[in-house]
Length: 141
Image (cartoon, rainbow, N blue to C red; front, side):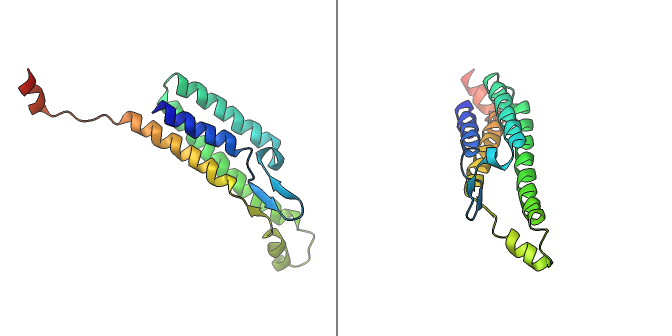
């Protein structure tokens, strides 16, 4: 399952370079263009997670995945709130929400969440061990 975790981690890191936000005229933004600090935090989480995957600390891997998902949700909420705040100079609230609606989330978020969920599933499968039947051991002894 370590390979599946590494694939998920690769998807998360690769997703940070993919378009996450589409702004008309300006173009697509990845994590670095959205916010440098959030990108550094994400890559720090990814580095810590790589270490935990390599030393087989699944409990810490799950903690890091939950922190990463919280960071993704925080970033999405921050993007939406910032887009509303960016158009605060407009006199009517309906205009603000209309113009803020042109800032769209892009397909890179799917890759980010897919990688995080893949890591979470792979770390859960490591905990599950097949059950052995008592009768099987008695017959083979």
